Every structure is written in structure tokens, then in C-alpha cells.
Length: 123
Length: 123
Image (cartoon, rainbow over all chains, first blue to last red; front, side, top):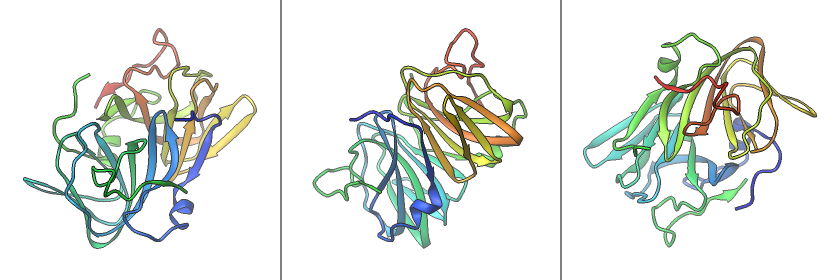
């Protein structure tokens, strides 16, 4: 992966205004070998897990559900959620659109499987 | 480093209400080998750099200055700043207290030097 060369400032709202598709991660910055991604979410995503990495979610707008096999955690703006590696989860936005910031290692598939993933693209 | 075992939800405002000291990073979550840190800032920090890691700053409250050798970048709530490895920088909060979320690899010294750093502690 190419290293970051210059300081980078990103206005999250400005980036969020530049796309409308849901469950389609946009890369807005890189931090070491990680991608900082923005996602708009509506409805349910698929059950999946990441065996090699924890996943960081920061809720920016809306009320987000993270389903786990033993229950659902509701996460709201200003709240951070860490999903540990190996833990099955299903992201969902059941009460209107949710806007999220995620951090994942470069190339992490959002379905847990590169064959079915919506690949993250640079915004 | 111990791996995260269970999903972790963190309310940022709740954590911020639990401490008052400035420039003293509090670890509120871990993501792979990284520490998610909250910091309250007032006044200037020291010039330093991290040769081994990029650094991610998200401004939560207040108006933050990041000085670089060729100028200052002002960063506000909802804005993200990536400082690449090897780049000298001086964080500063010159117009009131600033509240920040940072991500650093575990053990990263906030002065760039473990001998002078205010070590990050768990909150």
C-alpha cells in the first residue's frame, strides 16, 4: 500500500454529500494500512464476520443496529462500536438512514468475503 | 497485546465527562493493535513526530490547530486529520478547550519519545 505523504484534512459532511448509494463504502483517508471509510446505510446488511480483523464503527447520524447472535446493540451518533474479529454480526439501519464512519484494514470485504463484497472505492 | 473479545460500545460524551486533565490521553477502546484515545487539549503541545506511524485525529469539540513546519491547519468538529509518519507537527488549542479522538498504535508516545510522553492510560 502506498504510504500517506502529506497531511490530509477531511470534512466528513462534505464527503457524505458526494454520494447517495447505500452499503457502498467510500475511502476518505488512509491511516497506516487501514482505510477510513464512510457508509450510508438503510435496511439490513448480511450476516458476516472478519476472522483477521476487528472493525471500528463510529455513528455520525441516525440510529444503527448491530445484530449479534445473542442480541442487538443500538448505537447512536457520538457512539463508537468495536466488533472483534471472528464475531458474527449483521449491521442494520431499520429506522431511517444511518451515516457511519468505519475503519478497516485495506481491502477488507464488507461481507466478509471478497467474492460477494461491495468493494470500498476512493471518494 | 490482548485481543478484544466482546463487542464494545463506547459513548464518547460519557467518557469525556470522566476526566479533566489536558494532553493526557485516555484509552477508550482497542482496534487490532491500535488504541482509540480521547484527549482534552488547551494551549500548545510540543513539536514532535512519529517515525513509525501515521496518526489519526477526529475533532469532537472546539477549534484545533495543527502546526506544521510550513503552516497551520485549522480543524473543527466533524473534521478528520491524518498526520503522516515522519512529519513534524505541533498540536495546539489556542481558542478554548478542544476535545479530540485519536487513533495510535499501542504505546505510541504523545511527544514522539517515551521518555517525555504522557502515557495513555485506560479510562
